[in-house]
Each structure stands twice: as structure tokens, then as C-alpha cells.
Image (tube, rainbow, N blue to C red; front, side, top):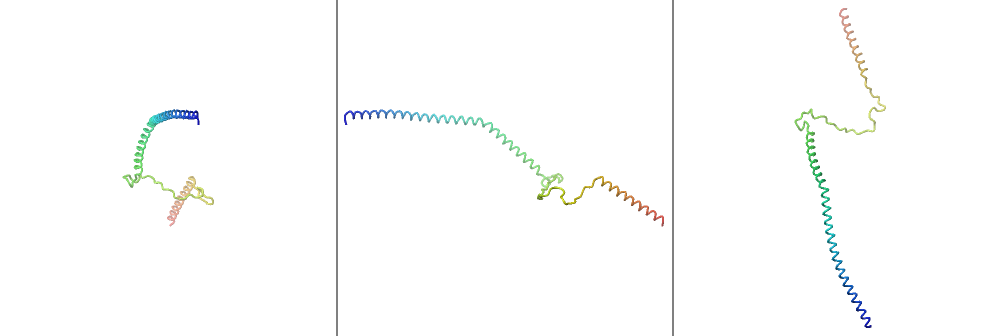
Length: 164
């Protein structure tokens, strides 16, 4: 190996050392910049989260107040319902109310539904309602016959007394 080749190798090594040193400085600079950028991202993220939380709080505050108002109204209505239930559930057996004020208690229909239709069934002779006019005529006839029979009895009694 000659002098020139050694010199070339030394030049190459020196160039590589300088390049390595400049890359090291650039790498340190980039690491510092990276750290600064990470800190800036963390700060901006915290700031954005804070602004988001403020906006959410501003938007939800009226809704929360409305919820509290409605919950209070519900509680008041529940109390009113309880009062009315107490009033409704009173009858003569658990209060001083007279039995006449108990009202009608509906009895549940326990019959099972059949397949038949409502009303008159086929094959059943059934009965018809008698009209009011027919009923009056019948009563008038009965009354006339009763008067006639009483007259006959009276007349028969009168004749039989005279002829004795």
C-alpha cells in the first residue's frame, strides 16, 4: 500500500468523521425540536380540552337547570298523585264515609269468550217483546171482562134474592 492510498484513506476517515459530527449536531437539534413540538402539542391539547369543556359546560348548564326544574315538578306531581290515591281509596270500610257513597264496584267478567255470535242463536225459538199498544188493549179487555163478570154476579145475586 502506498502513501497515496493511505492519505486517501485518512481523508475519507476525516470526511466521515466530520459528516458524523454534523449529523450528530443535526440529530441533537432535531431531538430538541421534537421535544419542543411534543410540549407544544401537549399544551395545545390541554388548551383545546379546556375550551371544549367550557363550551360543553356552557351548552349543558341550561339543560341541567331544566332537568332540576323538571325533577322538582315530577316530585310535586308524585306527591299530588299520592294524595289523590289516598282520597280515591277511601270507602266506608276504612273511613267515616257512609256506605252509600262507596259507589259502584265493577265485578270482573270471568266468563270465557265462546265462538258463538252475540244475540239470538239459530234454532232457538226465542220470545218477542210485546208492544205497548198490544199490552194496553189486552189490559182494557181484561178490565171490561172483569166489570162484566162483576155486573153479572151482582145481577145474578139481585135476581136470586127477589125470587126467593
